[in-house]
Image 1 (cartoon, rainbow, N blue to C red):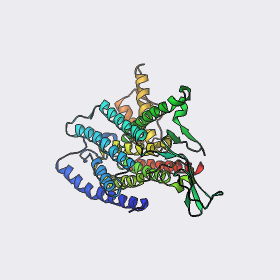
Image 2: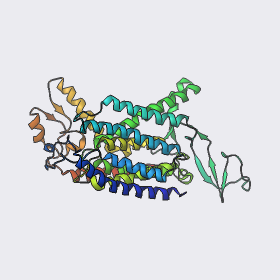
Image 3: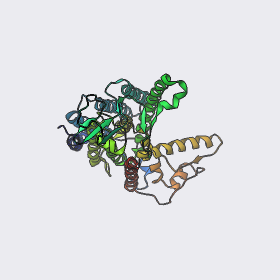
Image 4: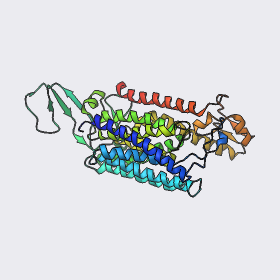
Length: 422
C-alpha cells in the first residue's frame, strides 16, 4: 500500500467496477422514473439515430466511482488529493443543478450562466489561494542525481543539501512557493509569471505574480470545463477523449512527483503531487467504465453533471503540477470545439447586423459540422452562406467520435513527448 503504482492500479480497477455495476442500477432507476434526455433532436442526425428518451445525469455515476476509489485508496491527508475531491464535488454540484433544471423543471436553458461562472470562479479561487498559502504546496525547481566529488563519505544534515542515495547523491534546490511553470520544448528554462511584473519592483512583482496565477487558475478551470461540456455531443465522445487526456496527466503527475523522473526529464519536482496519480487513475477507471454504457448506441448520457466535472478535474490537475501551458496541446480537441462555437457565434452576429446570414461552419460545435449537410442548413435558412463547407460526405457519429479520439491520442502522445524534447 506504500507504492503509488499499486494504489493507482487498484483505484482504477475499483472505479471501473463501480462505474459499470452502479451504472446499470442507476440507468434502471432513471428509466423507472422517466428521467431522460429531452433536448436532443434526432432531425439533425443524418442517420436518424433517436436520442430522445435516453436517461441523462449519468455524470453521477462517474462522480460516485471517482469518489469511492479515491476515498479507499488515496491519502486524505494530502492537500492535492483534497483539492481534487473539492473540485469534483463543486463542479459536480453545479452540473447537477443544471441537469436538474433542464430535466425536472423542463427549462432548456438550465442553470443561469452567471451562477455557473460564479461557481467556477469560486473553485479557481480555492485552488489558487490554497496553492499560494498552504505550507504543503511547495516545489523544488530542480533536482539532480550525481556522483559526489567532495566529502562523499559525510552524511549531510541539512534537508536542502545532498542526500546520500547509495553511490549517488540527490541534490535538490530549496523548497519554495513559486509561480513558475513548465514551458514546452525549452530545456533548463521555466517561465515565472512574476517576471512579467518586474517593473513593479522586487517586492511587488511576486505579489502580482501570484494574483496573475490565481486569475489564470480561474480561466483554466472555466475554459477546460466548458470545452469538455461542448465536446459532450455524441455517444462516447467526451468520456473517450477525457480518458486519453487522463492517461497523459497520469504520466505528467508521476514525473512531477518522482525525484528520479523529475531529474531525468528536467522538470520541477512537486512533493506530494504523486498522490494525483491515484486520483487520476480513479478518474480514468470511472470514464472507461462509463463508456460501457455510454458507447454507441448510448444507454445513458453524462449531462453537465459529468462534463463540467471532467473538464474541471483536467484543468485543476494541470495547474497543480504546473503544466497548464501544455493544456492547449493536450486538450486540443476541447480547444477546437470552443473556438468553433466562438467563431460561429461572433461571425453570425457580425454579418447579421449587416443584413446577411453567414456561418463559418455548417453547425457548431465542430463535431456537428461533420454530420450536417448543406441541404439541412439551407432548409432552415435559405439565404445562409457557409464559409467552410468541408466534404459533401456525411459521417456516422461513431466514425466522428473515433477520429476525434485518435486526434486526442496523437496530441496526448505529443504532449508527453515535449518532456523528452526538452
